[in-house]
Image (tube, rainbow, N blue to C red; front, side, top):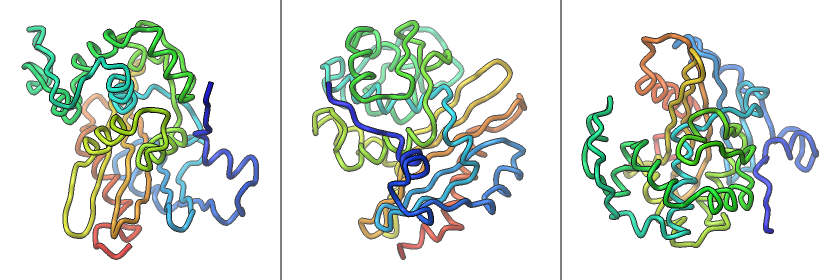
Length: 267
């Protein structure tokens, strides 16, 4: 069965396959996590220069629940297996009112991905089925590859993945190097795009899950300027019940990328 290695950072550090100066700590990024009183890590890989910058390298290698960042994989597996026909495929609302109003309606796949609808992709997972889902988790080597219940395993801490594995996933996706059909990868790549200006393209998927009293937040994706991509993976955690995950997670992302000179079209 075809396997490939996601642990790009681990390969650089543990196997010494690249020069040590290709991985550089970024302690100056700590200020953005301190500002919002969260623990976290951030990885940035400049594809053109082959340079890693990492804040909190130990955490970057620690696996944790992917929450809705798993929708990247779930969408790919759904398209691959036919559980999702295309990005226009509608799944009817089950009439259960949930906390996010945009979920409480019939949704096409593309919109469900962008509003991160959990019930839509729970239904996708049920249609894929446990056997096929396990096959693709194993084939890709996604995190610890563990499934509990088919429609909650990425939310209940059964499935876990690290930031360095997440970065490897989005890099492979960008270059159509995952073991999924090219069409599936191209469709999901297009859905990842969140911002596009003459200076840059910013593509990402977020995740937000609960582990006891902890809130776990993810942002994984890439920023592209002048056809030059740089890939990133960030996770944070907090026990503050009043923490604004959506706004603060985005603020950390933009602050770090801005400090690194992005958003100006000069990369």
